Length: 193
Image (cartoon, rainbow, N blue to C red; front, side):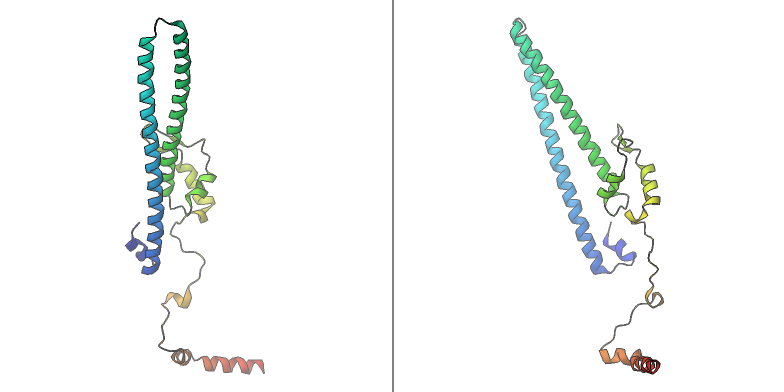
């Protein structure tokens, strides 16, 4: 989204600047959040690699000892469960990031509201990292709850002065003369008599 695009839609430049500032703050916040999650994932993957290496080394050194072999088996089971939990967490993070990105492209007024209305059991992340099963739900929401999206439609039917720009007067007196307010007030007083 660019300021020029907002101005082309009829938004004045000052409002467009404010919208862009708010949009920029949201993008920065999302990027910071994503960077933090990526660092967490990287750190956890390094921990897993280190654990796997330690387990293999320990397994080589204790082959003959039954007690240590039993303990090693327990650790392997524990680490397998931890690895599965970590992989599930990584998959959830990837799904959340992809869904947030996809919802950001829908012109939703508030993507969090849209997410709450989705049946996430039908939305999946494919092997390429693309969201599957979202489009049909979004189409339904755009039809049934169009107010949640900025679809570029003009609403309300309010058309001031036939769509013409308002005139700016140099003084209050000039505006009163131009619009013949005195005559209007006189007519209203005569009607009241």
